[in-house]
Image 1 (cartoon, chains in turn purple, orange):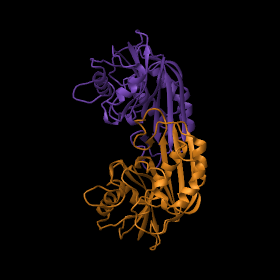
Image 2 (cartoon, each protein chain N blue to C red):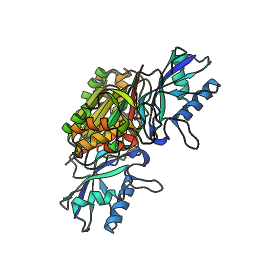
Image 3 (cartoon, one colour):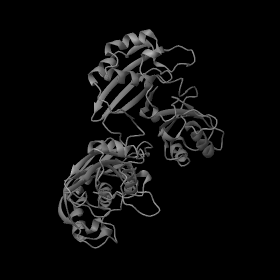
Image 4 (cartoon, each protein chain N blue to C red):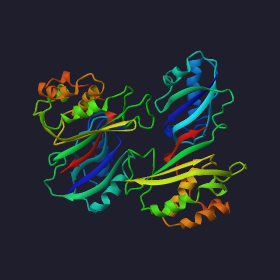
Amino acid sequence: MNVKILLEYDGTNYHGWQRQKNARSIQEVLEEAISAITGEKIRVTGAGRTDAGVHAAGQVANFKTNTRIPVEKLPYAINSRLPDDIVVKEARMVPEEFHARLSAKAKVYSYTIYNAPFPSPLLRNYTYFFPLPLDMGAMKEAASQFVGLHDFSAFRASGSPVKSSVRQINRLEINRCQDLIKIEIEANGFLYNMVRIIAGTLLDAGLHKINPGEVASIIRSGDRDRAGKTLPPQGLCLLKVVY
Amino acid sequence: MNVKILLEYDGTNYHGWQRQKNARSIQEVLEEAISAITGEKIRVTGAGRTDAGVHAAGQVANFKTNTRIPVEKLPYAINSRLPDDIVVKEARMVPEEFHARLSAKAKVYSYTIYNAPFPSPLLRNYTYFFPLPLDMGAMKEAASQFVGLHDFSAFRASGSPVKSSVRQINRLEINRCQDLIKIEIEANGFLYNMVRIIAGTLLDAGLHKINPGEVASIIRSGDRDRAGKTLPPQGLCLLKVVY
């Protein structure tokens, strides 16, 4: 059967989702746990290939198995073999053709900035600390221009493999609650580092380093150098995958 | 001069506030940092002696120093010597007689329960995970009976040194927001483990293991065995000290 699982993880101590040599990845730890309980060699496909230090509240993955463990018992069985920074919250049988990444219609990421004079020990692994005052009005104005179907070449890590860089951003919200500025982005797909570069560009707007009205022209330019810095990974969280 | 500092810390990797042999404490790490920047042997007094694994968003401490570093620069200087799980957020000169613990009029603690079917990796160090359904109405009714001046003998760790166990609880709020149940308690002082035992008793009320109306009689009984379990430290956070 093909099993779809919903996952939450704290990415602090992992080198990202994707299996790699000489570094501990979420995928590897998960595959080892599922292989151990099913007695099969399990290969897991994730919806989003989160980077080192990036978190997930709602990552989705799927794997094929012939296990006789009832699907509703799988989360408990798998969790019993996982460290406490990775948890399976749901497992469901899905059609054979379901593919966690290719079947996804949209994904939602959040990027959280802790904007206060001093860093927060309690939030240090889940937010990006930025002490200078930020103009929320300018950030909101800049944010609105990302929504829609655009070529986001200016908002992807340089050296990314050459494929289409056109994506549809369905929604980009930015709100402040006390010292936290939360950016939430839903798109049909994301380029490498796209959310972290968008967050860096919004930060530049908040600092008046760019004019918020300039965002549309930065997008059109396709010029990575005109967009903002790639903000660090710990502020990023994969919230949800939409099918 | 006598300096009052405001502190935030993540208690996960410390054996509590108080200096002790063979274990790393917040107090020790802080004293080493301040001693290093002032060149004096500094002794720090904390308002609340938080236990191992307990956090603080608003701990207060004071220390005497002859340093010539301006008081407003002290947080930056001290933070440069602290690990990133302890941060000084404010420093002020206070009268010589100010004592962080003895001068405190009240303290506010929060205890947070993560009440969902599966544990949360992202919240695991800052909440107590409890999967069974809880009756919020019963918890609120139980909570209301703690407010006031009472002998809280039933709500302190057995074997605590024999001193007065009469305390005034000014406020005890309990609210649910999605999967988080947050208990906030303000009192003129707390007995050893008092908040964690009160939280355990509210949990018993939420499970209908005790009748919420019973709380007044448990308080009167002074019987530790009738109160709930001591919930684990990671859900506890010292929010504020009132002077």
